[in-house]
Length: 142
Image 1 (cartoon, rainbow, N blue to C red):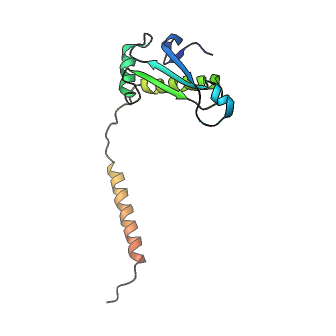
Image 2 (image 1 turned 135 degrees about the vertical axis):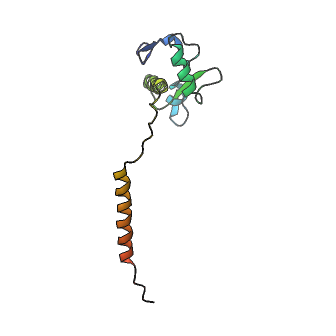
Image 3 (image 1 turned 90 degrees about the horizontal axis):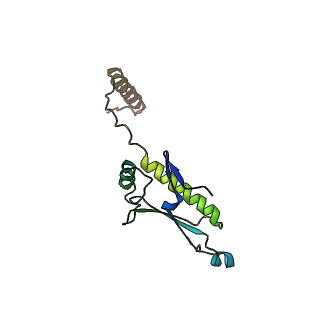
């Protein structure tokens, strides 16, 4: 098992990650009923000492719908029957969430206009298409 979590050059120690293990739901017989294989990983963004303030701000803004009222990100995994594998999946999901949330904002789009030649080409194509459709019509003999 690795020591903590690395996000954009910032090391989040294991002490800031809160792990909880519960029994997985669904069928599975005695193993599922007796083993705490489902994983719940909690990370308190606001209380983190490892994250700089600018990243905390960005995370709370971008993950606002995923944060609890106390400011925690929760990842729940019950995909496999192995607690170790579920822990790895939970760490990966949390890392992916934090990497996406801390990514810098995209550059704003610079509005552009179509060139004169592009506008002319569009109109020419429309005329050609209209002419083609006109030739397909039945003649009006009235």
